[in-house]
Image (tube, rainbow, N blue to C red; front, side):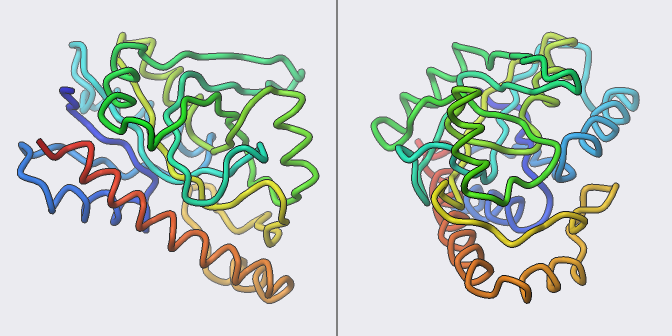
Length: 230
């Protein structure tokens, strides 16, 4: 499996992937931190392409990070490999982009039975309600949700860049999350004060989210090591 670039949300997810890579003997790989969220990511990718950090040749890109479950079949700390990403337009049209099948098969083979092939839904916001998670999972026939997948596929497929995605589930579909509305700014960074306020309003959900994220980050580090070890 030849990967040229790893894209991973900035912050703790980026740090976990870098720690995993540091424990391997693979050749140096560019790990590029991307903003959290669909809209800031689109602007980042456009700027990246304009500055030719994505050269005009076929590259293999691996997207890594955390995601949320939309299905009772997929639980905290489960590893998922994306087949495709779905996005609901403002007109509620279902737009679908597929990951590169060859790269995806290579990743799945490397992880063996530890990973499941899934469809992901890309959302413009954090889905906090357990009821909404399950509803989206059923109506969109998607197993997991994130905030970046579709935008990456759309940008990269325009330049014939091959993309595959591996994520670790950090929260299940049976419990609510703190309301993170407003916690992610226009640059795709998590704001400390709005996050703290959201967590104080729902302390039990906040503790559950923190524990789940820490567990998923440990698995993400292990997955990175597994993928890039001989």
